[in-house]
Image (cartoon, rainbow, N blue to C red):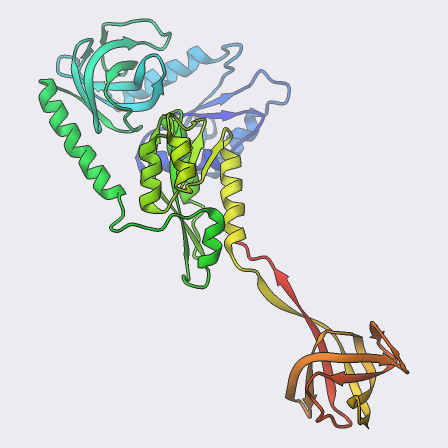
Amino acid sequence: MILVVAADDGVMPQTKEAVNHARAAKVPLVVAINKCDKPDAQPERVRRELSEVGLVPEEWGGDTLFTEVSAVTRQGIDELLEQVVLQAEVLDLKANPDKPAVGVVVEAQLDRGKGPVATVLVTEGTLNRGDVILAGAAYGKVRAMLDAKANNVAVAGPAIPVSVIGLNDVPSAGDPVHVVTDMKKAQEIAETRKSKERRSLMPAGGAPRMSLEDLAKAMSEDEQLELKVIVKADVQGSVEALTEALQKLSTEKVKVSVVHAAVGAITEGDVNLAVAAGAIIIGFNARPAGKASGLAQKESIEIRQYNVIYNVVDDVKAAMEGLLAPKLVEKALGKAEVRQVFRISKAGTVAGCMVIEGLVRRNALARLTREGNQVWEGKLETLKRFKDDAREVKEGFECGISLEGQNDVKQGDIIEVYELEEVKQTL
């Protein structure tokens, strides 16, 4: 595996993630430090940061091969290829070309003129034009193969990537590719796999349709909210990257479930699935086709379209946070000590107080405590400074306070005044 790291950026979070994936798969790494032609390139910084995650260069006493390259000037490309060949010889990587081809789908997309196009890396055997292949739940006869320079080729041997045209559907990246004996057998296997996928995607029972805003209403009913989404994109790589990014947003409070993810335009079938699952549809460089837009509007299905993956993640995360009911946090304003109590026939009980801490604000919430015990909680009814109404009275000043619905006030009582602030919850 060739790990490409930009010399001007250094090791990013996605770089560490790629290293972890390679380790989990037990795949050896060759590091290509790219953009070494730029003035602000710092290849030594890249070496240092990668050594911190366990990739120590050979020149530093480690076992990882490093090459400084430039995709623009082609600096170091030959050295990189030599290192890859050396690594292959050390690992004794060999494949038999004299057998039916076996490979893996690297990328796939739906081309308007060519139909489903899958980039296949042949790992064993030889793939020929005219072979019947099975790629995941897709099948077909190889009508044409294009190499990395878009030239037509008739055969592709081990380690050769080619774009294959002729499949009936867009496979997923990572799907295994096999050459089968005839079209009928390939179709039977593909249909079996597809039916299993449908059964796993469809919910057990119908779910109410729901938009991001509607989920907020379910807060009182469910401890954990669930946002169901259908992802459609222009290429398989975007589908997988977006699906993984959205699923990582799940928390204990809000869970993101990807009901379906595929390449191509948003179709009526996607809208019908959204109706059944109660999901929203996210289109990444993919627009509604045919009557899908009208059906979505009729069925009140939300379709959101994007062309930058970070905007999708930020939008969904912000919407998820918006679903959470804000927390009410108490903010203490001040305290007043009752110095004298007045009984007034029309006004009821009025407490003559001294503000001993903070301030007292009219219409604020209050607690009445007596000898350390709370005896009442409610709202300030009136606040006066001498005979005039006051909006607030600060520490060190006297005031008259009457409590809403409370006349049992005694000298020495403490009135604690506070407000409740709404604090937005985060994921």
